[in-house]
Picture 1 (tube, rainbow, N blue to C red):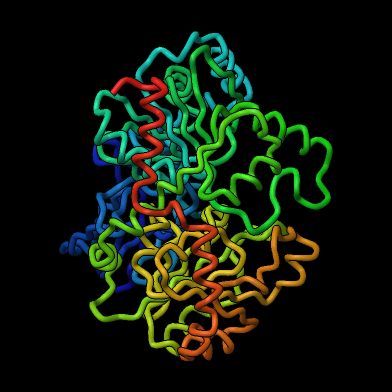
Picture 2: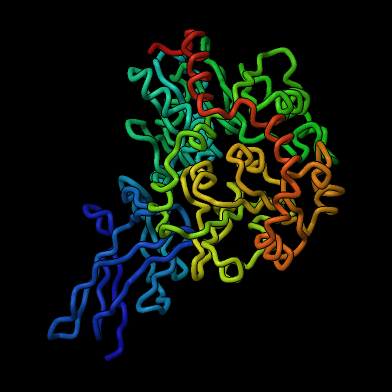
Length: 484
């Protein structure tokens, strides 16, 4: 008997889709998006040939807790076949907004649509501007525009939670699919609570630009941790910079009280690139890299489902200004087979939304994994291009490979470099996947770069000693920005 879906409706109490069908009960009913999959509980067909399924609008990844599905469009897939979903009026649930049109289910953050209108946004901004603010012993954290709770803000959060338990820790998130640290409070971007927390927190800790309207409240401080030592030119140093962008950069950097740098080289570059010349830069190493010294690689591998003794390659390229999705210079499945390894694919934060998880035998897409540093710890070798992860991974001393088929274009037209990567790279530069596979099996290719690796670590990793978070929190508490 043919299996078909007859109705789909939203159950607010269960935070789920209720699906009714006719015919043989399906073996699997799934809601499949770009970065997440939810699986239904299916009841066997009754004597009348009817079946039903409960499809929770949440999923668990990496051994973590079940969380609401990320925002986006989802296909309803029954026994491997995509099924058109009848229209469903949008419903605002506690953890997300859900509706259906055009044959797919649409998930959005749980923000009342009234606040997404021009009038609603202006009302919230006006209320925010009028708040006196900065009266709460709290921190407002944001990492990669609310798409993560990792990087430097995440590491500082862990240290603060241990040493200053009276501090309230708010995390700005694009939706509730983003896991936040234990004891922290998630606030969804654009919601009334997001605006309130942003105004009331005495300290803001971010790793990228402050978006939307920002009005500094009296006594409020901003710690800009940034998110990588730069090889590629940025901010005022980018080629072809429009005057409006130039003014925006100056306006942004004047919002920061302190800038964090991984090393003295990064301090010099960031000061000039952002014209951050009269305020302090803390050259304390990167808190996010503490885990490279103190972390448990076996625990991370287990969470990723990697067996003992497996060789693990992490492929983590940067984004490109001229494309929205991750570069396709690697066939992960073919690389895993040729290198006899598990291949972890890590897209850049800017490619999370437009991209789609890759799959294949011994391929794990970890673009949505909360903490890049944990992936660096779990990997036996890193394959990158121009990404700042090169400066983090080198703290481990493990092999680095640079897959750079577009080197001339990127260096000469798209971005430009602060130094000659080919002359100083602490690992082989290759142009094709075939060259990469050959280099991965050639021990001498790594040995040849050993002197460069040592010099690289001396320049860039001198403060990545496992105690950067403690140094940064020492400064925060010594300045009296928070009460422990």
